[in-house]
Length: 230
Image (cartoon, rainbow, N blue to C red; front, top):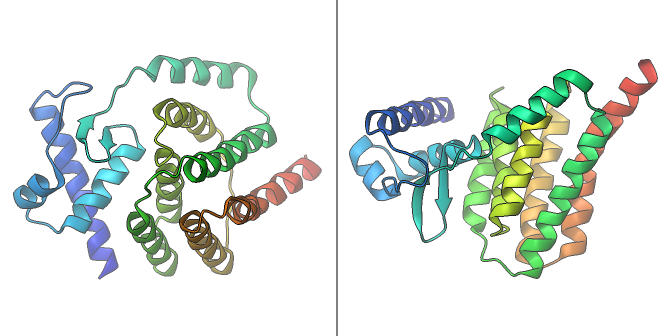
């Protein structure tokens, strides 16, 4: 059942992309609502929501809580091009890049809890359940892991912080890290996601950050091994 659902989400994603192109929509133009998409595409709200989250994650759409769905502003493209050139010319220290990502993730948790941002707990849980399904069916686990973390950062209600994190993510995407995790470690990652969400719900910043720190440990261990072997 989950494989069929995932395929349906991909179909909806492509249809939304085509709709944007066919209607010649520009950055900051308002797009259809979840309800309108559900009715037009004849699919469930859950499928539409997953498709929208995925499109937001790759920078095509921008979802404003209570404010509608808009075509994303692509003004960061120039910055990404500069970073790509810098990477190709000078390379990057992977450990430093992961350290920056860790700082961003920990900072996002602090912003959410200190600002008491109204978080869509159910949405985060649904994303994490899709992550679990991908784990148990050998699906695209990295996709749902990324969406989960991007949704957390988006929940800070700070567009500048989110845009900055996306720049770092694009730079990170240029670095190929062949980190292969077994199912047990992926399940542990899924459990950590749930613990982080629960800690946010309880306004427990210390526990949220402690769990996020543990969440990053496998990749730091992998990098240390790479450094020792090089």
